[in-house]
Amino acid sequence: QVQLVESGGGSVGSGGILTSSCLFSNTPYSSYCLGWFRQLLGKDREGIGVIDSDGTTSYAELMKGRATISHDNAKKTLYLQMNSLKPEDTAMYYCGYTAFPSLLMDARYFESWGQGTQVTVSL
Image: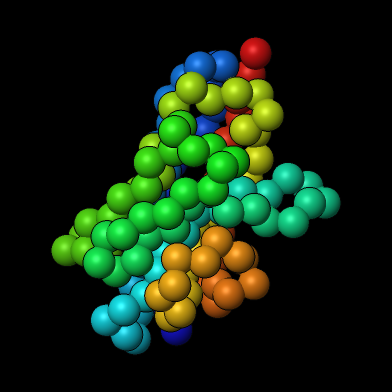
């Protein structure tokens, strides 16, 4: 079973920068997709961006230009760097894995999730 363990997140003032990491393991296939999503309480999980095993990325308009996704396959780690953070970016952030390597940013296609990390942006 694919396992994802997140770290990072935290609290920052408006305009700040935060980086989150996601250590992934037990991926059964050489081709896959990893993604970052966020979720507000009572809301659906929404995509920030995805990256496939070849390093191709795709970003949602949600944080386009303010989020950068990368991964280090040797370290089995996925990264999310967010800058120019706004209070409305406050949410739980999750990394996800899917064996469906199509760069779809739909949470329904992701089969494994990290535990989530809280990001809080203050005024």
